[in-house]
Structure formats: C-alpha cells, structure tokens
Image 1 (cartoon, rainbow, N blue to C red):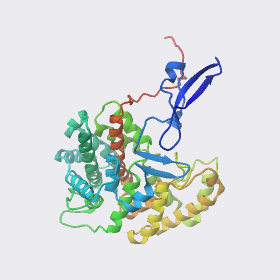
Image 2: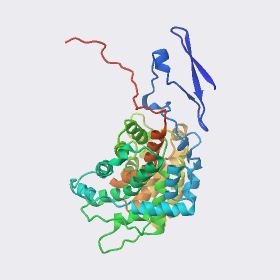
Image 3: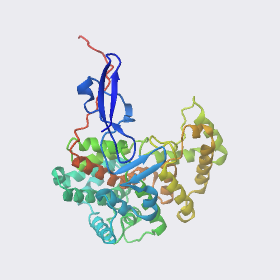
Image 4: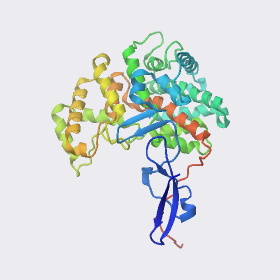
Length: 422
C-alpha cells in the first residue's frame, strides 16, 4: 500500500498516512487517525477536497464531463434504457432482464397507492403551501405508516422499503400539485407505466381521460434518468448524515428533500426560467451578459457552471439534444428557447465564461422541457425529487451495509472568544 508523509514544520515531526486507491478517480489519503496522532483537524469548508464515504454507485469526472451509474455511461442509459431500468441498476447493481423489468414495473405499479391517511394530511395543508414543504412532510409521514422500516437489517427488506418509496413518490408529487390548486386527487392507474402514471395523476379529472403522448413520456422519463443520482451532493450527503444516526429511512429522504429545496441545489431550473423571462427578448441578451461579467454587479447568469463539472455537464448535452429533437412535438416556448440559444452561444465562445469553465448545466435546459410538459414552475423541484429518490435510497442502503461508517460528525475551526467572565 502506498503512503504519504506529512511533516509538521513547527516541530519537524513527520507522520505517514495510507493512500487508498479507487477503481477510478483520484486516490485518497486515509486521515482517520489524523487527530489522534497529531492533535489537528483538516480544514475543508464545503468538503471540496474530502471523501466522506466509500461508494460503488455513481462516478463523476468533472474535468472530462463524465457521469456513470454503476459503471454505465449516462449517455448510454438515457438513450438505450428507461428510468425503471436505471432504478433497478442503482438498487441491485445490474440492469434487469426483460422478465425482471416486467416484474419490477408491476411491483412499482402495485405499490404506487398511498394510505388514505396521507390524503387527509394533504387536506390539512394551507392553500398556499409550497409543494416542496408538502412533499417533505408527506414523505416524513410515510414513516408513521411503515414504522417497521426503522429496524430493517437485511437485503430483502431493504429492497421492499426502497421500492415502496420509489413507487409512492410520484403519487405524493401529484398530490402536492392538486392540493395547491384545489382540484380533486387522482389515484394511480395500475394500467399505466411509471412515468405515464405521473403525467396522468397530474392532468386527469374524474370522468375525463387526459391526452398523454409517447413523446411527452419519453422526455420526462429522460429527465428522471438524468436526475437519478449524482454522487455526494448536498441532498445526498444530508440523507447519509441523517441515516448515520439510525433515523427512519423515509425521514432521511425527507431531509434530502428539504436540502434539495434550496435555490442553489434543486431549485436552480426555476431560477433559469425566471431569468429567461426577465431578459425578455434577444435584444436584451448582450446587456445581461455584460452585467454577468461586471464584478461590481451582483447579477449572475443562471444555469451556467457547476461545483463538480469543469466541462460541459453530460446531462446538459443530453437534454440539449432532446430539446432540439422534440421542441416542435412538445411545444417548447420558441421565444425563450431563442434567448437561451443566444446566451449559450455567447457563453461558449466568450473568454470570460470559457476561461472560468462556466458551461451550461442541466438546469439550463430542463426548465424549458418541463414547461413544455405543462409542469408548473413551482413543481420543478418535485420532479427532481421523483428522479432522485432512487439515488437517495440506494445511498441509504449502501451506508447501512458499510461496516466502517460512523455517525456523521464534522469538526470545526473555532474562532470565538477563549474565555469570558460574567
């Protein structure tokens, strides 16, 4: 095993630490004994250089712009497989056979119904409640109906628990929409596929069949696939942190939903759409680009740059191509699309953005597609929740099966008063 030597130049004392190698990606320095041996902590705000766990689920190469689920490139999965295949892959480590796909599909259809008590919970929410607040509350409430999941400890029970919440999440998301607008709740239709069922619950009215095209199903299914997991982001890290305490898995997912709610995370595509509308016309694009480059102006161009990707976000490439392919069939707002195209063209050629590696990210395109699918803007982040739940619950399972994991407890660099008297 390789080692690294760190020297404290104040005392000339040297310490050796093991270097652990992954199957792909950067090596890591094992500093678990650092404080015990040196009396020091590392200082890493935002954990930009810290690996918090060992994982075999998702791999990102930000410099190359690569994203892989269980070793499969996201481009291949998005083009050749559907969201349920991706869910099966994340949960079990392998893509399903044809028979397994059918079995998995049927199981999720049967589990898509929620307890009638959950419907009563939604009725108690105020008319103006935010969909994400209702979403996190209802997911947390699921733990009261499936309390036995608190003490599960084997793979079979993990799979039942995971499939249950993956199946119910679209139902809860549709309920948040219908409660906000005061329209009747629509139950799942067991004869419809996962993604189609969600659109059905969003659009249907008692006694009336909604129009749902295969093109729309395909577009939304792709968005779900692209959001399925994304390594140790803020919401996933939150799920793992809560899970490390021994909390109910659905409580951990609810915590992830609350973390995703933030504009800097899951709410970014809402901001992109609001900004495109603010810009308003092609004639205004140059002025807003100028503002984005002005260090004295607080204006930021939404949908560009990423904490990890220093290249074109591969998910953004997929959605960009999908948008061009389906824009006429799903009715994309051409005015906003033209503004987005002009912004993208300038940003990809302007040295200000290129030198800072500010490439379009997934949020730059997803809002345009979701708007064309008649998804209300305030529900955009709930769509993110539907796609990401499988990632969260897979990460939860991995943490529970990891014998090295302890309760999450970061340390700090204290800079407050040393001692004060009253």
